[in-house]
Length: 205
Image 1 (cartoon, rainbow, N blue to C red):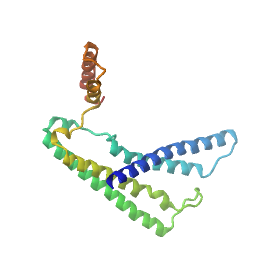
Image 2: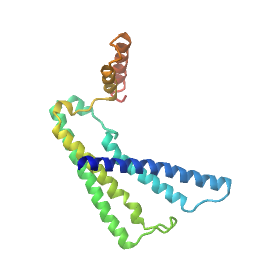
Image 3: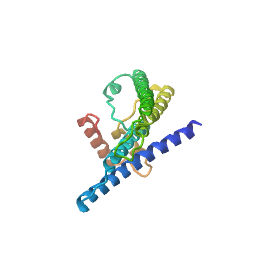
Image 4: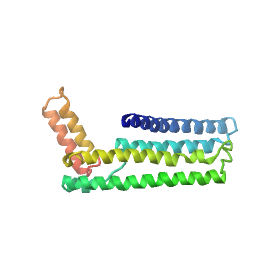
């Protein structure tokens, strides 16, 4: 059941993020061409492109929780013992989860208010605004589910394996796993170069 839910949420977030940014660019581009080439423009184009970008950004942010693509400062996690780092990760996930679910809940409450007020978009075909605002409770709920997954995984994972390795260490790990790459001088030089860059950039590689 959870595997199916994971795939469904992943498909929805990826699809909306990709379709939203693509459609938003297409609408904005079409409106610019219409304005400067044909001296005409679509009244609804500006609002529609903004809402499409908004939905794309929110669902892309939700998807990034699955891929650990959000910016994270791990300086403290790198210097403390791994068992302490694990508890710090659990605490950070708990705080993030509470925040995301709170925003999702109050986003839902706000939608009920918008429905009661019958707020509508003036330029975008008079559609009810609660449809636009659905992005808040849904995307934050999806993001909360992803954080819950991370929380459960972190709790089950031994503390030695909880702290994520850097991108530079990922590169080195891939080199070591590749059976076709020999541990020759070139590879050793590459490892040294990556470690030097990692040191000089403070782990920002």
